[in-house]
Length: 202
Image (cartoon, rainbow, N blue to C red; front, side):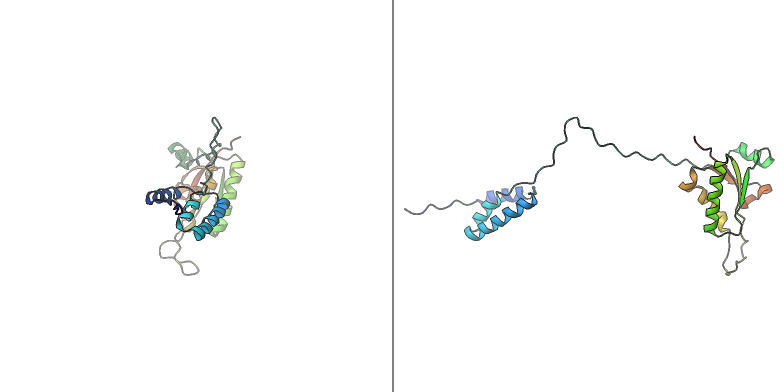
């Protein structure tokens, strides 16, 4: 009586297995052990034995399902938007120009480098807010006229005049400054700014 021939995988079985194997990810340690066994089986019994052993590889463990009714993780709080910095109201501008509204403090940034001017400006704004001031004057200077040159023979066109408005609108200053506008000629014109200070929130 001839020995019974071992039944191998059909082409359809092999295609189904390949499709299944592509959709699962076995556990790393167990997969390694089973892969070694599959390799050894393949060496001992040929490709059919290797396929049979590979079919025994376990699928990846699915992540635990969330418990019904479990509270979702709290979302991170969204920081409040920065308050806007707006031009001064017409009424405030009229009162400043006519002298009916007092300028409570002022700072002159003439002659300072950008770094020094920025540090002095921020310290001045903080001090003004702590003191309860509402309206201050910042003197930037108009800068040299076109054609004039600085000591290094580089054209100077009012660096602080351009930079101070930028600094007033930065996040670090928005909680202090509520608005600003160019000063009247009596207070410096294009070389100065009226600045409104926010009240300290208690």
